[in-house]
Image 1: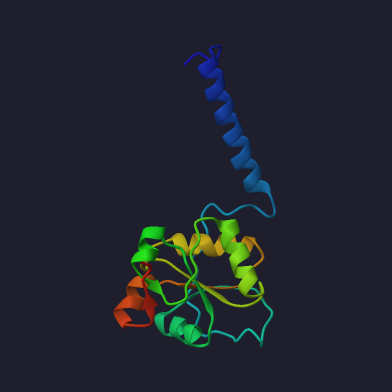
Image 2: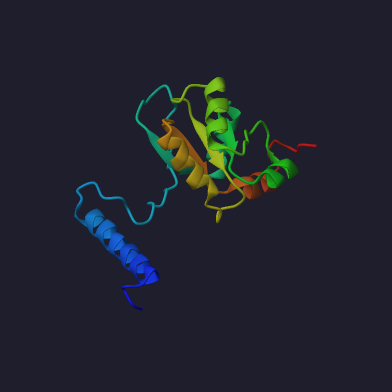
Length: 162
């Protein structure tokens, strides 16, 4: 490819920019991780009144049910069609992140716990949403890895939208 052509110049600038970006990330003290760290299952959950430390942890089905029974707000990270077909009772769902943030803030403080879930243990949407909520100032986030699949199999409270 000839670097004197517009296409060649574009490719050169793109490659040069990538090299500079990746290189500067390697030498920074606070570099951006290449892959998000795996969220580990929490062994225990500290009630919100005992700790003000930020939390982002994965939880099991029994932990999710305990939080549900305590009145913790659940957020569904799945697409609208899946949510409409069935979701955890009382779970929130909005298509836009900012709308979701405003809805949660109208219900509770950013320091109150939230449980985020999606379809099944292999679904990464709940983790993505949890990271977005964390970036927006929420600091008690629990990712229910088993998601709708485990919850519905257990026969726990659910609802469908008509």
